[in-house]
Length: 443
Length: 149
Image (cartoon, each protein chain N blue to C red):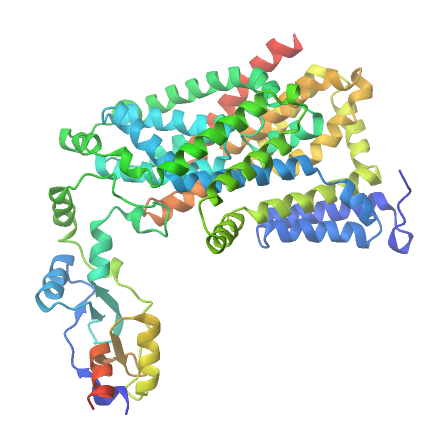
């Protein structure tokens, strides 16, 4: 690695640290768009001489970017079929209009869909139907939306593609879809069940709906939610293929990013085929516009900022500090990462935190006998960062998305009201994870 | 020609404390798209119209942007809609008054009024500089004044 040549001969360690701290601090204030802030930090890393352009490009994790873009395209196309509304309405009818059963089933659907798609999209599709269902049942929607937020972040923790921290970790460490499912899904099932039980004790057992309200739910026709049957079949087929390919990624010798992008291209191809050239242009333009470019460019900027501090040696120092602080005890370190990342993720964006922690944890490999020995630390980071998002309303993007939809529909969603219940429930999930990580990996 | 020449002076109005039921009765009886809402001192406050009424009959989330593609999965439940209206009818229109309508002044030219109709597609409240409502101009008033003279 070449020695950085920083402006005015300043120490690259201090310059890169200052840029990192300033970038994260401004992101936390939410005064400026986070993508603009991250890209500004990246530009400063290059213009100050901490990185040159080639090093900034080398710092990019193209597998993560491809996976995010591919999944966003798949969702953008398939959501138009109405499939997600269908599933939500079907769940409400399966529950035979019982409010508690509907709450439980919608939460389960949210968790499963969140494990396979991104959390924000999931809640964006499920929350409006939930508001309709609760309006028809004449029951308060808050408990339903609250439970769906928790379910979304819990479900997203179970897979490689469920939550951005997992995408980052999986891509950086070479962990597959199956690795995440085998290691995290079992404890996620337990955590989800416990959270459902707690929600039942708090809300579910008091919920009642009049017979005529239940009859309104049973009179809903979920088939009417399907707006495009052809697209529905194509979407289900391609999503099924993509998930199968994730499962078989090692056999196929393909990275997750390639699989997701290939799936998106296949669905675009099928969707464009029957249209004329002009309609195709309009359609493809519309689909690409639905990619969350703010998130993508946020990642691009972040990768360069993290590459800057890594290049300057800051993250090696952080790894050394972590070793000293935990006295080199692997168990203490794993649990510190789990709890530290959970608390931090409840109050700051977990994506920059995880992006910074990845090189720090990688730097610990020589002290613990190589990269394979670090696996418990990766699972601790994933569980802490993903589940920690449930701790407050600003802990994860899905939380703010639900709050935004709820507020616009006239349902108050206050920071402290959410925190009062969500933070202890997040701590409970981390306590369960602690037992799991300890028994499975550390004992 | 200005709005003063073609406006309907002293139009029918609503007050913020009027009930949704009262407003609905007046809108339906007169087939108005909307009625201006004024304060106790006849200052213009906003407007309440048939589209506010329609929005109140629907589940609120269905009126937010386009988060739901359609509502065709709901049963055709007129009794449910009437039940919803009965719950709302006694409440005041105040919280539902729209305040985003473009306003005209009495001296606003008819060309400007036509542009405002083109952009807003609603009746134009005509308001003095001190906020007093002095009339309304409907798009029929404006178009017939131009074409029929």
